[in-house]
Image (cartoon, protein in one colour):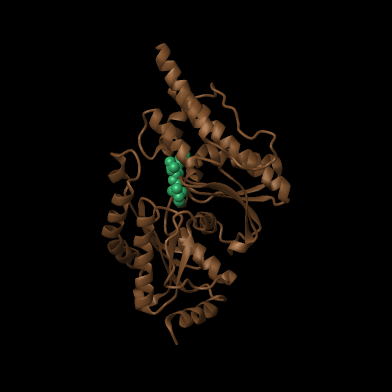
Length: 351
Ligand code: KG4
Ligand code: ZN
Protein backbone atom coordinates (compact mmCIF):
# COMPACT_ATOMS: atom_id res chain seq x y z
CA UNK A 1 0.00 0.00 0.00
CA UNK A 2 1.39 3.43 -0.89
CA UNK A 3 1.90 6.27 1.58
CA UNK A 4 -1.36 8.10 0.78
CA UNK A 5 -3.61 5.02 0.85
CA UNK A 6 -2.17 4.13 4.26
CA UNK A 7 -2.71 7.75 5.44
CA UNK A 8 -6.39 7.56 4.43
CA UNK A 9 -6.82 4.31 6.35
CA UNK A 10 -5.22 5.85 9.42
CA UNK A 11 -7.59 8.86 9.26
CA UNK A 12 -10.57 6.47 9.09
CA UNK A 13 -9.43 4.76 12.26
CA UNK A 14 -8.80 8.08 14.05
CA UNK A 15 -12.23 9.65 13.47
CA UNK A 16 -13.83 8.11 16.52
CA UNK A 17 -10.79 8.49 18.79
CA UNK A 18 -9.79 11.40 21.05
CA UNK A 19 -6.71 9.85 22.64
CA UNK A 20 -4.09 10.23 19.91
CA UNK A 21 -1.24 12.72 19.62
CA UNK A 22 -1.00 15.34 16.86
CA UNK A 23 2.27 17.19 16.31
CA UNK A 24 1.40 20.65 14.93
CA UNK A 25 3.39 23.43 13.24
CA UNK A 26 2.76 27.10 12.50
CA UNK A 27 5.24 29.24 10.54
CA UNK A 28 3.06 31.54 8.41
CA UNK A 29 4.51 34.84 9.64
CA UNK A 30 7.01 35.70 12.37
CA UNK A 31 6.39 33.00 14.99
CA UNK A 32 7.89 29.53 14.63
CA UNK A 33 5.60 27.33 16.68
CA UNK A 34 5.25 23.63 17.49
CA UNK A 35 2.70 21.93 19.75
CA UNK A 36 1.59 18.50 20.86
CA UNK A 37 -2.20 18.05 21.00
CA UNK A 38 -4.39 15.26 22.33
CA UNK A 39 -8.03 15.82 21.34
CA UNK A 40 -8.76 19.42 22.31
CA UNK A 41 -6.13 19.31 25.03
CA UNK A 42 -2.84 21.18 24.57
CA UNK A 43 -0.09 18.91 25.93
CA UNK A 44 2.71 21.32 25.01
CA UNK A 45 2.95 24.55 23.01
CA UNK A 46 6.25 26.20 22.10
CA UNK A 47 6.51 29.55 20.33
CA UNK A 48 9.80 30.98 19.15
CA UNK A 49 8.97 34.61 18.44
CA UNK A 50 10.97 36.71 15.98
CA UNK A 51 9.47 40.01 17.15
CA UNK A 52 12.79 41.30 18.49
CA UNK A 53 14.48 40.56 15.13
CA UNK A 54 11.83 42.35 13.01
CA UNK A 55 11.27 45.24 15.46
CA UNK A 56 14.20 47.24 14.11
CA UNK A 57 12.66 47.16 10.61
CA UNK A 58 9.22 48.27 11.85
CA UNK A 59 7.55 45.16 10.39
CA UNK A 60 8.12 41.57 9.26
CA UNK A 61 10.84 41.11 6.61
CA UNK A 62 9.75 37.92 4.77
CA UNK A 63 13.23 36.62 3.85
CA UNK A 64 14.51 37.07 7.39
CA UNK A 65 11.39 35.35 8.74
CA UNK A 66 11.98 32.26 6.55
CA UNK A 67 15.62 31.99 7.56
CA UNK A 68 14.79 32.20 11.24
CA UNK A 69 12.05 29.58 10.92
CA UNK A 70 14.70 27.21 9.54
CA UNK A 71 16.99 27.96 12.47
CA UNK A 72 14.28 27.39 15.09
CA UNK A 73 12.14 24.53 13.82
CA UNK A 74 14.33 21.59 14.89
CA UNK A 75 14.88 22.79 18.44
CA UNK A 76 11.24 23.75 19.07
CA UNK A 77 10.22 20.27 17.88
CA UNK A 78 12.56 18.69 20.44
CA UNK A 79 11.27 21.02 23.13
CA UNK A 80 7.58 20.43 22.36
CA UNK A 81 8.09 16.63 22.47
CA UNK A 82 10.15 16.81 25.64
CA UNK A 83 7.65 18.98 27.53
CA UNK A 84 4.80 16.72 26.38
CA UNK A 85 6.76 13.70 27.58
CA UNK A 86 6.33 11.89 24.26
CA UNK A 87 8.59 10.69 21.45
CA UNK A 88 8.15 10.85 17.68
CA UNK A 89 7.01 7.21 17.67
CA UNK A 90 3.97 8.25 19.80
CA UNK A 91 2.77 10.82 17.21
CA UNK A 92 -0.02 9.65 14.88
CA UNK A 93 -0.62 12.78 12.74
CA UNK A 94 1.42 15.83 11.71
CA UNK A 95 -0.56 19.08 11.15
CA UNK A 96 0.79 22.26 9.60
CA UNK A 97 -0.39 25.67 8.41
CA UNK A 98 -0.21 25.73 4.59
CA UNK A 99 -1.83 29.17 4.03
CA UNK A 100 -2.43 32.10 4.13
CA UNK A 101 0.74 33.86 5.05
CA UNK A 102 4.21 34.58 3.67
CA UNK A 103 5.21 32.06 1.01
CA UNK A 104 8.79 31.43 2.15
CA UNK A 105 7.74 31.27 5.79
CA UNK A 106 4.90 28.82 5.09
CA UNK A 107 7.22 26.59 3.04
CA UNK A 108 9.58 26.02 5.96
CA UNK A 109 6.85 24.57 8.18
CA UNK A 110 5.14 22.72 5.33
CA UNK A 111 8.30 21.01 3.99
CA UNK A 112 9.42 20.09 7.50
CA UNK A 113 6.00 18.63 8.39
CA UNK A 114 5.74 16.66 5.14
CA UNK A 115 9.23 15.20 5.50
CA UNK A 116 8.59 14.26 9.12
CA UNK A 117 5.25 12.61 8.35
CA UNK A 118 6.62 10.73 5.35
CA UNK A 119 9.66 9.58 7.32
CA UNK A 120 7.46 8.34 10.16
CA UNK A 121 4.94 6.79 7.74
CA UNK A 122 2.02 8.74 9.28
CA UNK A 123 -0.54 11.11 7.70
CA UNK A 124 -0.13 14.85 7.53
CA UNK A 125 -2.80 17.50 7.11
CA UNK A 126 -2.44 21.07 5.86
CA UNK A 127 -4.51 23.55 7.85
CA UNK A 128 -5.91 26.94 6.85
CA UNK A 129 -4.45 29.46 9.31
CA UNK A 130 -7.84 31.13 9.81
CA UNK A 131 -9.44 27.84 10.85
CA UNK A 132 -6.64 27.53 13.38
CA UNK A 133 -7.51 30.92 14.88
CA UNK A 134 -11.17 29.88 15.11
CA UNK A 135 -10.24 26.53 16.71
CA UNK A 136 -8.33 28.37 19.48
CA UNK A 137 -11.71 28.79 21.18
CA UNK A 138 -12.00 25.01 21.64
CA UNK A 139 -8.84 25.00 23.75
CA UNK A 140 -10.56 27.27 26.26
CA UNK A 141 -14.04 25.75 25.94
CA UNK A 142 -13.75 22.11 24.93
CA UNK A 143 -17.52 21.61 25.30
CA UNK A 144 -18.34 24.02 22.45
CA UNK A 145 -19.69 22.98 19.04
CA UNK A 146 -21.07 24.68 15.90
CA UNK A 147 -23.16 26.48 14.85
CA UNK A 148 -21.58 29.80 15.71
CA UNK A 149 -20.53 33.09 14.14
CA UNK A 150 -16.74 33.56 13.98
CA UNK A 151 -15.29 37.04 14.08
CA UNK A 152 -11.75 36.76 12.68
CA UNK A 153 -9.55 39.74 13.54
CA UNK A 154 -5.93 39.13 12.65
CA UNK A 155 -3.03 41.01 11.07
CA UNK A 156 -3.77 39.60 7.63
CA UNK A 157 -7.53 38.93 7.71
CA UNK A 158 -10.73 40.44 9.02
CA UNK A 159 -13.90 38.53 8.32
CA UNK A 160 -17.13 37.17 9.72
CA UNK A 161 -18.06 33.53 9.10
CA UNK A 162 -21.11 31.44 9.70
CA UNK A 163 -19.68 28.14 10.96
CA UNK A 164 -21.86 25.03 10.88
CA UNK A 165 -19.04 22.48 10.94
CA UNK A 166 -15.26 22.29 10.57
CA UNK A 167 -14.99 21.40 6.88
CA UNK A 168 -14.69 24.20 4.28
CA UNK A 169 -18.15 23.46 2.91
CA UNK A 170 -19.66 24.20 6.33
CA UNK A 171 -18.07 27.64 6.69
CA UNK A 172 -19.66 30.57 4.90
CA UNK A 173 -18.09 34.01 4.74
CA UNK A 174 -20.70 36.67 5.57
CA UNK A 175 -18.43 39.72 5.43
CA UNK A 176 -14.79 40.74 5.13
CA UNK A 177 -12.55 43.76 4.87
CA UNK A 178 -12.36 45.39 1.44
CA UNK A 179 -8.86 46.76 2.15
CA UNK A 180 -6.68 46.61 5.30
CA UNK A 181 -7.11 43.94 7.95
CA UNK A 182 -7.98 45.31 11.38
CA UNK A 183 -4.60 44.26 12.85
CA UNK A 184 -2.80 45.89 9.95
CA UNK A 185 -4.66 49.15 10.64
CA UNK A 186 -3.66 48.98 14.33
CA UNK A 187 -0.03 48.45 13.22
CA UNK A 188 -0.13 51.37 10.78
CA UNK A 189 -1.76 53.72 13.28
CA UNK A 190 0.88 52.71 15.83
CA UNK A 191 3.59 53.63 13.35
CA UNK A 192 2.22 57.14 12.71
CA UNK A 193 1.78 57.63 16.45
CA UNK A 194 5.47 56.79 16.85
CA UNK A 195 4.82 53.53 18.76
CA UNK A 196 6.72 50.23 18.51
CA UNK A 197 6.05 47.03 16.56
CA UNK A 198 3.77 45.09 16.68
CA UNK A 199 1.51 48.09 17.01
CA UNK A 200 -1.75 46.58 18.26
CA UNK A 201 -0.73 46.07 21.90
CA UNK A 202 1.00 49.49 21.93
CA UNK A 203 -2.14 51.29 20.69
CA UNK A 204 -4.19 49.45 23.32
CA UNK A 205 -1.74 50.50 26.05
CA UNK A 206 -1.73 54.17 24.97
CA UNK A 207 -5.53 54.22 24.59
CA UNK A 208 -5.94 53.26 28.26
CA UNK A 209 -5.13 56.90 29.15
CA UNK A 210 -7.32 58.35 26.42
CA UNK A 211 -10.96 59.29 25.92
CA UNK A 212 -13.29 59.57 22.95
CA UNK A 213 -12.42 62.89 21.30
CA UNK A 214 -12.23 62.27 17.55
CA UNK A 215 -14.95 60.70 15.45
CA UNK A 216 -14.55 58.81 12.20
CA UNK A 217 -16.97 58.13 9.38
CA UNK A 218 -17.86 54.46 9.11
CA UNK A 219 -17.75 53.26 5.47
CA UNK A 220 -20.68 51.37 3.90
CA UNK A 221 -23.25 52.70 6.36
CA UNK A 222 -26.73 51.69 5.21
CA UNK A 223 -25.44 49.51 2.33
CA UNK A 224 -26.83 46.36 3.89
CA UNK A 225 -23.76 44.08 3.65
CA UNK A 226 -21.39 43.03 6.43
CA UNK A 227 -18.06 44.04 4.84
CA UNK A 228 -15.64 46.44 6.54
CA UNK A 229 -13.09 49.00 5.42
CA UNK A 230 -10.32 50.27 7.68
CA UNK A 231 -8.11 52.25 5.32
CA UNK A 232 -10.31 55.38 5.51
CA UNK A 233 -10.19 55.38 9.32
CA UNK A 234 -6.41 54.92 9.23
CA UNK A 235 -6.02 57.77 6.69
CA UNK A 236 -8.19 60.02 8.88
CA UNK A 237 -5.80 59.38 11.79
CA UNK A 238 -2.83 60.28 9.57
CA UNK A 239 -4.60 63.48 8.41
CA UNK A 240 -5.45 64.56 11.97
CA UNK A 241 -1.78 64.22 12.91
CA UNK A 242 -0.36 65.96 9.84
CA UNK A 243 -2.91 68.83 9.93
CA UNK A 244 -2.10 69.44 13.60
CA UNK A 245 1.60 69.38 12.88
CA UNK A 246 1.16 71.88 9.98
CA UNK A 247 -0.71 74.20 12.33
CA UNK A 248 1.84 73.73 15.09
CA UNK A 249 -0.85 72.27 17.38
CA UNK A 250 -0.40 69.51 19.90
CA UNK A 251 -2.58 66.43 19.58
CA UNK A 252 -3.40 64.28 22.58
CA UNK A 253 -2.11 60.98 21.20
CA UNK A 254 -3.82 58.88 23.86
CA UNK A 255 -7.19 60.40 22.86
CA UNK A 256 -6.43 59.72 19.21
CA UNK A 257 -5.45 56.10 19.98
CA UNK A 258 -8.62 55.63 22.04
CA UNK A 259 -10.84 57.16 19.34
CA UNK A 260 -9.28 55.01 16.61
CA UNK A 261 -9.55 51.85 18.72
CA UNK A 262 -13.19 52.62 19.47
CA UNK A 263 -13.99 53.22 15.78
CA UNK A 264 -12.30 50.00 14.57
CA UNK A 265 -13.58 47.79 17.39
CA UNK A 266 -17.19 49.02 17.43
CA UNK A 267 -17.29 48.50 13.64
CA UNK A 268 -16.47 44.77 13.81
CA UNK A 269 -18.61 44.24 16.91
CA UNK A 270 -21.68 45.88 15.34
CA UNK A 271 -21.32 43.83 12.15
CA UNK A 272 -20.92 40.65 14.19
CA UNK A 273 -24.13 41.34 16.13
CA UNK A 274 -25.86 42.04 12.82
CA UNK A 275 -24.57 38.66 11.52
CA UNK A 276 -26.17 36.99 14.56
CA UNK A 277 -29.49 38.76 13.91
CA UNK A 278 -29.50 37.78 10.24
CA UNK A 279 -28.59 34.12 10.77
CA UNK A 280 -30.49 33.57 14.03
CA UNK A 281 -27.26 32.15 15.54
CA UNK A 282 -26.71 33.38 19.08
CA UNK A 283 -23.12 32.31 19.74
CA UNK A 284 -19.93 34.11 18.70
CA UNK A 285 -16.31 32.89 18.65
CA UNK A 286 -13.67 35.63 18.68
CA UNK A 287 -10.51 34.75 16.73
CA UNK A 288 -7.14 36.21 15.69
CA UNK A 289 -4.42 38.43 17.12
CA UNK A 290 -6.63 41.50 17.69
CA UNK A 291 -8.75 39.18 19.84
CA UNK A 292 -6.10 39.81 22.51
CA UNK A 293 -7.36 43.43 22.71
CA UNK A 294 -9.29 43.92 25.94
CA UNK A 295 -11.37 46.79 24.61
CA UNK A 296 -12.63 44.44 21.86
CA UNK A 297 -13.14 41.52 24.26
CA UNK A 298 -15.14 43.68 26.69
CA UNK A 299 -17.26 45.37 24.03
CA UNK A 300 -18.09 42.04 22.38
CA UNK A 301 -19.21 40.56 25.71
CA UNK A 302 -21.25 43.69 26.60
CA UNK A 303 -22.98 43.84 23.22
CA UNK A 304 -23.51 40.08 23.39
CA UNK A 305 -25.35 40.50 26.68
CA UNK A 306 -27.57 43.24 25.24
CA UNK A 307 -28.39 41.09 22.20
CA UNK A 308 -28.80 37.70 23.89
CA UNK A 309 -25.60 36.38 22.24
CA UNK A 310 -23.15 34.08 24.04
CA UNK A 311 -19.55 35.19 23.40
CA UNK A 312 -16.54 32.83 23.48
CA UNK A 313 -13.13 34.39 24.05
CA UNK A 314 -9.96 32.36 23.49
CA UNK A 315 -7.22 32.66 26.13
CA UNK A 316 -5.08 35.68 25.26
CA UNK A 317 -2.04 33.42 24.72
CA UNK A 318 -3.91 31.52 21.98
CA UNK A 319 -5.15 34.67 20.16
CA UNK A 320 -1.88 35.46 18.41
CA UNK A 321 -0.11 32.88 16.22
CA UNK A 322 0.61 29.51 17.83
CA UNK A 323 0.70 25.84 16.79
CA UNK A 324 -1.73 24.58 19.44
CA UNK A 325 -4.64 26.11 17.53
CA UNK A 326 -3.41 24.40 14.32
CA UNK A 327 -3.34 21.02 16.08
CA UNK A 328 -6.85 21.46 17.48
CA UNK A 329 -8.13 22.54 14.04
CA UNK A 330 -6.60 19.34 12.63
CA UNK A 331 -8.33 17.25 15.30
CA UNK A 332 -11.68 18.90 14.43
CA UNK A 333 -11.18 18.37 10.68
CA UNK A 334 -10.28 14.70 11.11
CA UNK A 335 -13.35 14.19 13.30
CA UNK A 336 -15.52 15.95 10.69
CA UNK A 337 -14.34 13.57 7.94
CA UNK A 338 -11.46 15.43 6.24
CA UNK A 339 -9.00 13.49 4.10
CA UNK A 340 -5.27 13.61 4.84
CA UNK A 341 -3.26 15.98 2.63
CA UNK A 342 -1.31 14.68 -0.31
CA UNK A 343 2.47 15.12 -0.32
CA UNK A 344 2.08 17.42 -3.34
CA UNK A 345 0.24 20.03 -1.23
CA UNK A 346 1.78 23.45 -1.88
CA UNK A 347 1.90 26.54 0.32
CA UNK A 348 -0.96 28.91 -0.44
CA UNK A 349 -0.11 32.49 0.62
CA UNK A 350 -3.51 33.98 -0.26
CA UNK A 351 -5.70 31.15 1.00
O1 KG4 B 1 -3.42 36.60 14.24
P1 KG4 B 1 -2.10 37.24 14.35
O2 KG4 B 1 -1.17 36.83 15.45
O3 KG4 B 1 -1.30 37.08 13.02
C1 KG4 B 1 -1.91 37.02 11.79
O4 KG4 B 1 -2.44 35.93 11.45
O5 KG4 B 1 -1.93 38.07 11.12
O6 KG4 B 1 -2.39 38.80 14.46
C2 KG4 B 1 -1.38 39.74 14.57
C3 KG4 B 1 -2.05 41.10 14.67
C4 KG4 B 1 -1.07 42.24 14.57
O7 KG4 B 1 -1.55 43.17 13.65
C5 KG4 B 1 -1.07 42.80 15.99
O8 KG4 B 1 -0.79 44.18 16.05
C6 KG4 B 1 -2.48 42.51 16.43
O9 KG4 B 1 -2.74 41.22 15.92
N1 KG4 B 1 -2.62 42.51 17.89
C7 KG4 B 1 -3.38 43.41 18.56
C8 KG4 B 1 -3.20 43.14 19.95
N2 KG4 B 1 -2.36 42.06 20.06
C9 KG4 B 1 -2.01 41.70 18.78
N3 KG4 B 1 -4.16 44.41 18.12
C10 KG4 B 1 -4.80 45.16 19.04
N4 KG4 B 1 -4.67 44.97 20.38
C11 KG4 B 1 -3.89 43.98 20.87
N5 KG4 B 1 -3.77 43.79 22.20
ZN1 ZN C 1 -2.60 34.57 12.67
